[in-house]
Length: 244
Image (cartoon, rainbow, N blue to C red; front, side, top):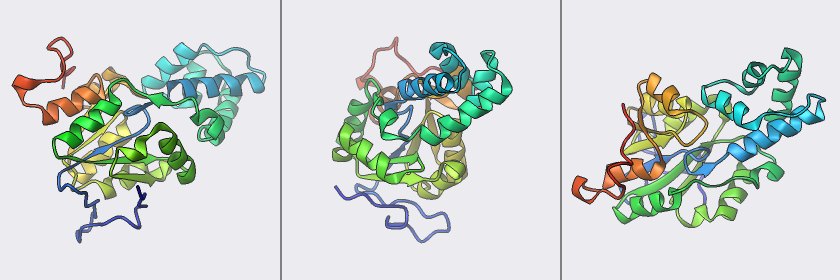
């Protein structure tokens, strides 16, 4: 399947040009934390960087909990008692290496992610993944390895430093944006489309709810709410939408 860059994508004639998907209705999905589990990569890399810089052992679960509250990497380390200078050095090294193949190989599908994409397509939705990464080639290779490119209609990659505006430029014609972070929510707000948050990624349910997001436990629950009639819901009543 060919992969279109934003410049190569079919855009509408509006100022906020968006992807023209086939079929006409389409859903935009974030990648990290929405479809794939990046926790192991992010925590393992942080532990490795801290050890290389002489900082000792990292409590990976505590680090991830801090990240899910919205803390940047350096702030999460500081909250765990790492000195400020060392925290900043670790965060800088972490940022340089987080997209290296060695660490990307640790990512895996989140539970229900493949089924969510199949469900969307079965109900007539196009599927476009919009992710913020620096290294386009690396994310293409990763998506190929995971089998994602065989499922989706298009992969779009935007610059992380302008993730919200970059994604917003691509999604104004989407039926909804499904993601796990504040930048995904901001992109949807800018584009004027529905945002469906998932609590499976880099931000917690509490973090997303506090920002007024509609939140679901998993991406499959979000997709099911969109495409499956109430009487045919694909998940149990005990596995319901978390809250607004």
